[in-house]
Image (cartoon, rainbow, N blue to C red):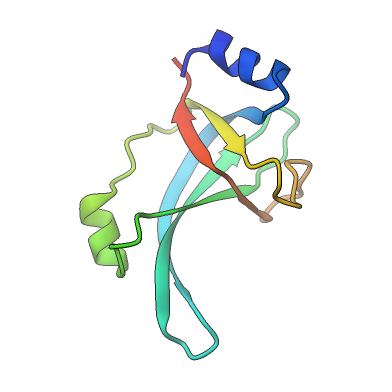
Length: 112
């Protein structure tokens, strides 16, 4: 995503933030019965104000294991690359988070 488009999204009222990529991993999500219900991408990012939350996005529904996720949804970001993280306006969490807090995002795109 181009920086001017990210700014336009922000000015249009959408919640977006630019952060630096640090690390990526996959994690299985289970229900109370310990059945796997999906896999999430976890992106560790560094914000300009020094906070370092973890951003979570869901993998496609057909992926049910971490091994499948690693094969079909590899992370294409490089360490230090700037990312545009987009949030759903209806989500109650916000990006004013402390270190280690998981924040649900709608999209994580590279900043061109």
